[in-house]
Length: 92
Image (cartoon, rainbow, N blue to C red; front, side, top):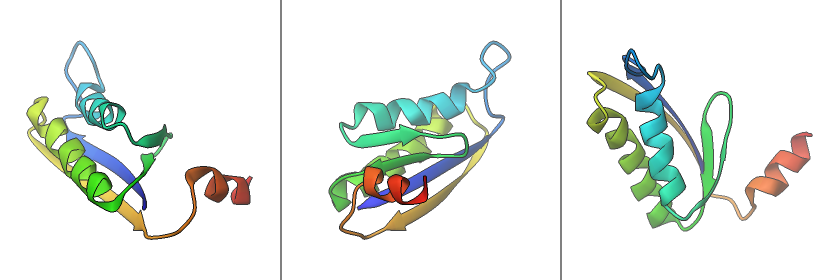
C-alpha cells in the first residue's frame, strides 16, 4: 500500500520552531520503519496496509500531542502493487 499524508496543524509550530507540530508527525513516520519520502506538500509512505494505516493515525495524533490546537490530515491511499520509486519514475 502507498499513502500520502499532509498534516495541517493550527498553529503549525511554536515561536521557537515554526514547524514543530508538522515535524512531530514526520518523526512518527520516520520511526515507523516504513519506506517514506518527505516532499514539499506531504509525505509519501509505503508498506503493509495495517502498518500504513496505523502510522497515518499516529502521525495525525502526533501533531496534536505536540501542541497543535486543531489539525486536519489530508490523506491519499493507493492499493497498488507498485513502489514509490516506480510511481515517481513514471512522472519524472
